[in-house]
Image (cartoon, rainbow, N blue to C red; front, top):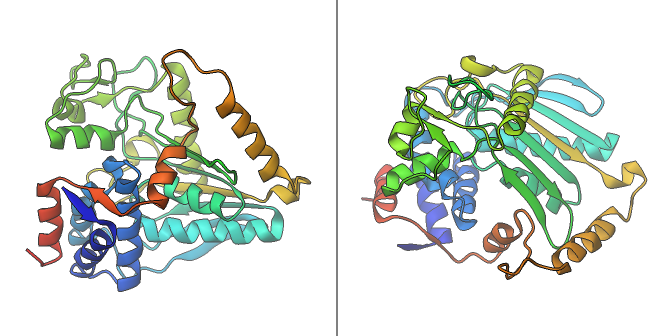
Length: 334
């Protein structure tokens, strides 16, 4: 069904407020989730709201938690999120990164004691829209083996990169062959998975999303995806004072305390002596888009180009009837 975007934000906000979240935190988190749905990233949209609520009900989200600086030197900052909702903490981290980039040219912000932040590219899009280069990584609870392994030790560990260009460039990708949220979304819709993206609990290939969630998801590109996932695990986990590997909990099973970490970068191009960076990079991206296409391709699209446009021009979001009813119920409206 189609739901008016503002109506979706209002009802999701009410659902969070109905579970003890402040109006400002509730609205910000609702906006983050609806933005993901508007962009077609349903795996990180309102599908996630009931899981956020379970985290609140289990006491793993502190509505009154304090976000504070626990370490800093120049452009480098570590924040404790005070166990507030992940989108609230990540938004504060993005603002802090941009503030430090204004002063030092580079803002590097690590975060621990937070919760699932939703769609990672939401934050790099905010940063790039303000004229900075944005980079964000986060680790998640184990879902993926290292290359050659069969035991889930690594998270799906997404990476996002945003450039202040026109056309927009906002890469948002997991280091797994398929995002766990997408597996969850396909399970909810009764759909199967592509071949060669997941293993069952015995290490055998599966296309059943329910079985995959009990087993492991594979790295994309074999050793390459595995290597990136390990790097993210250490940088978004260990470097910022959060957990790594099998010690990470609470991003999927939100009844458990969340121990993962985030790492966000904001880079001011002028600090690198490149005041014309945005226009030059934009010209290059337009050249890429205008280059010769393969015979079966209608348009060369940049990472995030279509999803950013969808969000900017959104009027309605597509939601499943049962999902909308559940959210209305959590808001006390059904």
